[in-house]
Length: 292
Ligand SMILES: Nc1ncnc2c1ncn2[C@@H]1O[C@H](COP(=O)(O)OP(=O)(O)OP(=O)(O)O)[C@@H](O)[C@H]1O
Image 1: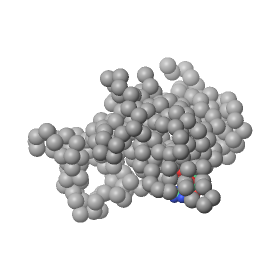
Image 2: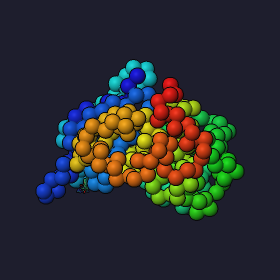
Image 3: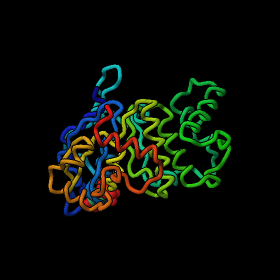
Image 4: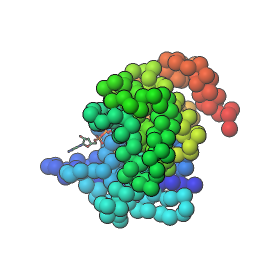
């Protein structure tokens, strides 16, 4: 049940000298899976994410390879072959993105309701006004924000709430894949935790797949089904989270794991800090492998 196939994707920045930011990257994403993409700053994670959804701007250029989206009804869509108009029309229906600091891209002079409604007006023009408004409220509640805040303007919401609104927007069209590039990095740890919990809950409820990008490997170990480790533009290791943690194969993965001292304590201390005992317990079971 593959939803996305990335095949031999290479992306350069055509500057002098050229930067080979993504080198021959291949992986598949399964329906409903959380795939973590880890690696240090500058290894090419964001370039890869933008490349997948064809949002790269010059001097970046895809020099080879492709990303193919497999729709539920069995149609394969190679995004490289779509024109700009087709791409705009289908992109957010199939795959949506949440970026670090996305919360700052809300329009400050437009209410949350109008910004959410705008998505439906553009992509679901046949929806009646009442249904549209209902969906906006439902959407907000899904990400843990009271629908009473629909009339608020961005500056009236906290950073965490604004980032939740961005996640709500990314979910509005019920995409099958969400690409999240450091979606919680700008937030404090408690809010970060709450949002991550929300994302995994929504994933369970709605069944979308997630590519979750961060340099924070412990966080990925906590939320991912599989993890790809990226280094200097290449994926050097891809394994399920438990295997990657207990039996890393690549020297770089080993070094990356060793650079997080809290990971080397007793089983269970695997999850940094502790915010939610229930989550800790679940993760301990998960890492133990005793849950299905
Ligand atoms: N506009 C650009 N022109 C030239 N080189 C660029 C440009 N943008 C990024 N790069 C280079 O491409 C490489 C990959 O950058 P990218 O931002 O994708 O990495 P990253 O892993 O997402 O880093 P971070 O976690 O810091 O965002 C880096 O070497 C970076 O310097």
